Image (cartoon, rainbow, N blue to C red):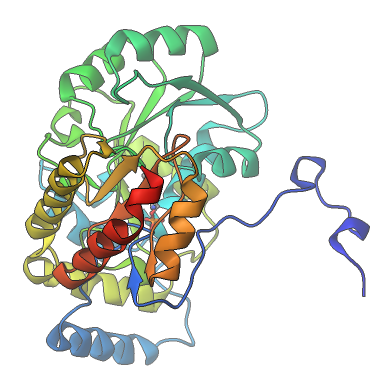
Length: 359
Ligand code: PMP
């Protein structure tokens, strides 16, 4: 047996740990912003049939360009987009790594605004892109001057704006994104993983005006397809061409493509709970405020709240009561995803059970 220390691991990876929130088997799982509602029996059956159909060709490589799926995704997004404007991969995680492999790399920088999604530094590290950040305002929002000043200071090739932002749930308006695109020639990637839950308009509205604007989306959240691993982007065809250069051949399996196409055919059903889940998160926020917690204004399907002197202890106490949420974001805060009414009741009860000692 040898250990990792005996292997010629890249210098910048020495000491790194695999990323990931704890995957625990507990009654109430509200830690990774998933949609709590699985697909219906009808949709499941259709997915199974589509996989059986695809399995008839599993001796062959999958359709490398995933053109049919890209056409379906373009139709879903609207805005006169066609398959040439869409790129698709195994989750928006892979979309981001394609973008940074194509536009980042040694000697280049990616800029984002903290606190934000904890995977971004890992995409940067993996692609040997320097990760630079600027802090968000005290209320975790962004304005154009803050972004443009940071661009002038750091000169990134890629700017990453997450709206609604994870873990804060705060949004960035179209006016701000429009102004940033006008005042910069960086590639501006707007990560809209939670856009379907938000009241703020999508940056897709700005697509025709700004050739370097990229909008990243996922089927993991609103579409309730986290296990299917499908993320995608909308951009100019040239950006798609750049991703096509760096993707691994046949990166998206035949069964993934088949399942995603069924999900898109049933978008009415799968997206049917989006409004309810956003309302669930807003109602939880109102409840937290009545209990005196500090709550961040969110437009996503999750809530960031605190402040706890020892958040790890609160997280553990919730877990001890069968409720798993996420220890992430600024010091003293915890993040909880919107779940079913029963799951939210369990979370509220658990908080009430422990709060006297914590607040
Ligand atoms: N972007 C943001 C802001 C996220 O929160 C997540 C998931 N937590 C992702 C991207 C990645 O999602 P996926 O790879 O499942 O599409």
